[in-house]
Image 1: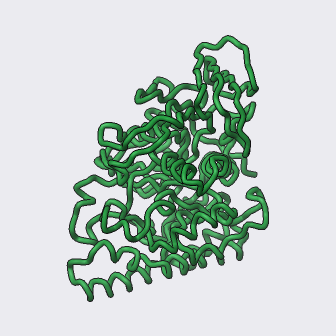
Image 2 (image 1 turned 120 degrees about the vertical axis):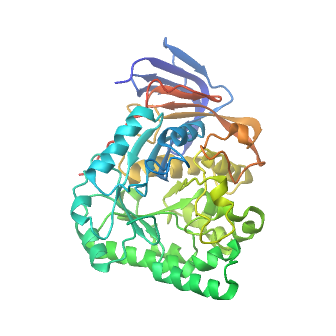
Image 3 (image 1 turned 180 degrees about the vertical axis):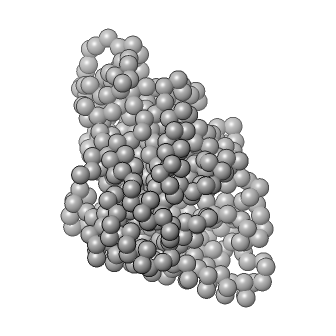
Length: 448
């Protein structure tokens, strides 16, 4: 249990679609009181006047690269970057080296996070063509989900056997999260590009190789299997206009069996940006043409998409600079800057702050049935962001906390910045400083 008290005074609290000026009193890791004026002694008092007080972000899709790929990132470095950007909770993917395909390997990641992560954490169990029984042993009360790569991945994690997929969807006791791209479509498109360009395939071909048709073919299969077996399915990083029709918005999120995530980079960039940023924005599924990007935000606003995340996936600058299309890896680092990217859309009038908080904080908690997180309610764990909406700053190497040390946003200026981040009742980050004596917590889930 967390010890100590924190009183946050005079901030604009944003929670459950409303905002008001008030105070929050934190005790023993939990929000004990929320009110217009709280007069209590606290071990620490934070003046939040002029600032927004927001629930901590829950990012349901990150790649922190440990074990085996720690030249790119570690749980410690990336969780530090996360809390600096207001992400208090992350759910990390299993495609490390070795991949988390056994209960023992999965537990090793939890053990490491308990030692080093300033953010709260959960880790997906991985699925392969030959670990079905092991995967189904996963405890739905203590693990966020089972990750199935229905498209290219590292190692032995591509699940392309239809019988295995059918069995996993039929029997899985916990949420299934899928990466949906059809492998046969990708291979066919890649062969056509190679025939056209030889060994000099430009990165601008990436959205043609990892095409909208390939995304839809795989996503529609996942939806078909989920409907057949009444599986709890969550499809990650939707990137196309074509896929929107697969999802419904006529029932509350709590009642949905099939949900969808959209990522900040697919809301921000389009295929024209490859000319400016090249491999820095190469990712899977690909950033696609502008008509796809423009269709994603309306689908988020009308609740066909439920959650905003990052798919934070760092690679070194040297790896991203490779000229060979097939050797330059897909993925970009984003977890430190996701709130900044969404606040820019707020400032443009494309989305309200209340909807951003709904999709980045409330909805992930509901979607994954996270125990007592995602809201600024009395009785909830105290995961809190204090955000200064008036601080002007520019993304630069000296303020990037990713281990790889770069961002596709370098040189871009933002208005507004995370000032402080409280994780499970303790101050984890304060204006560039980290306080890691007390670590984040393993998530629990309230699933039946």
